[in-house]
Structure formats: structure tokens, C-alpha cells
Length: 80
Image (cartoon, rainbow, N blue to C red; front, side, top):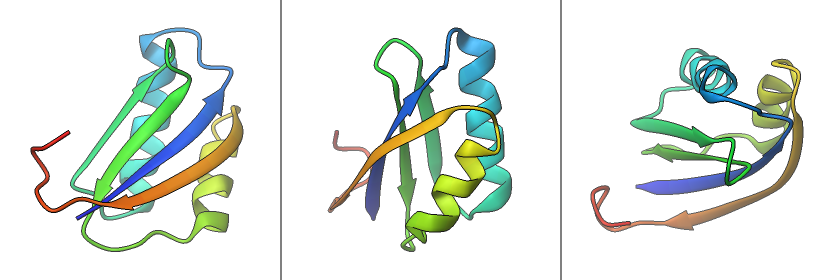
């Protein structure tokens, strides 16, 4: 399992979070996606790696600014 954490600027509310989550879920095969406007980030759990350029394009297409992207392998999806 791979955890991808994306800095996302501009989300202001839960509706914004849902907008980003929906776009990511539609564009990529992911196990889970969760955004937080308070933390200014989106966290994605996926079995397969996601192309960074495409991920940036999808999130930017929702109207938000994409910052740093961090990837780390997770042994078990339920461990945070």
C-alpha cells in the first residue's frame, strides 16, 4: 500500500474537500482519499503508484493550488 500526501491550498470547507476527493477518486483507482481544509492536504491510499504530473493536473483542475507531494509505503492500510 502506498500513502500519498498532497499539500492543497485553497480549500475552505468540507464541500471543497469533497470536490477534491471526488476528482481524485474518479481519475485514479484508489483505496481511500481524504482531504482536510484545516490541514491543507489530501491523503490518498492506493495499491498502485500515481503519476505525480497527472495527480497535480487533476487537483489543479478543481481550482486549488497543489504544493509538495510525499509518498511513503505502508505495510497495512489501517495503520496511520
